[in-house]
Length: 368
Image (cartoon, rainbow, N blue to C red; front, side, top):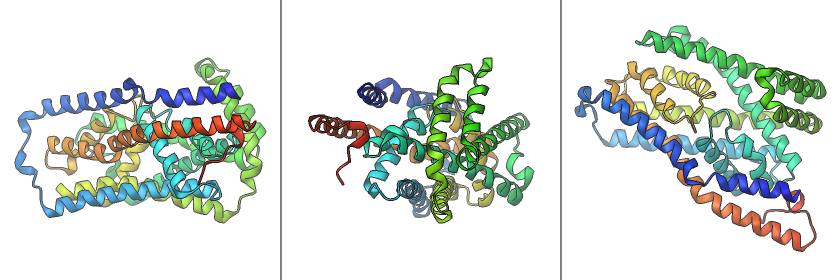
């Protein structure tokens, strides 16, 4: 267990290395700079009119991001049965967001979430159960929300843009990823509520295929975690699940509405329901983005996907940069500030637990 503790600390400390933080920033700035350079001749500065109204909408965007963090903090509090404080839950959320910002979207913050929850005093088994539940709730939200968006906006509203090639690429990627998310939600649901041992066998056998063999170890660990935690999760009440899903829905919808607020500042004629629905499509597509935090790709998709709603491509790119500053770069700054103090606290607790003859990772409690 001591080796596991040291590995967890090393993994978290590695996230602060300059290359982890600098890489997503560099990718994003290079992508934005390149797109600005290509559109420089078409840029019309008269389209940027700063007023009290536009400033108000940018403040509203910040408020929506606060709503997103409140939703995820609420969810962590619910999933831990209020065994961690609001401050601890917020810290875990910020740490997970920082991890998502410096790792590819396929990795995300969930892979480190168990470490962060363990550092707040929960044992590793329970922390694993909580992060599996967050995965299930996130996928369930996508599975439910996408058909609603399609019913409200229609096929053309979601996918028809001026560039037919980009439209086709976004559409095909969306349905491919949505199918995968639906399948993953089904597997997690069956593993939690019906046949955990069967799902474990399915994951292990699937990763014996040549293309999936590299994830065999991770699949076995995930399967074992599902079996170990399904009993506890099946005993939770419907109200408990409803509260957790409320926090999930609040966080995602608030995240999407950041773009609504930004576009209201400079594109007041845009269909706001369509803006919201297209955010859902964007985040589904970005789920498989290979760059850290979706850097570069996010800005490119925003510019082309929302370009028809905005006066010019250059203005769309500028708004994309504003969106990323509010919803992404701010978490890089917060993470850089939070992780060092969190690591120092965890080290102190481990040393104290060791001096008392207690296994630090499983039993230590974070001071409230």
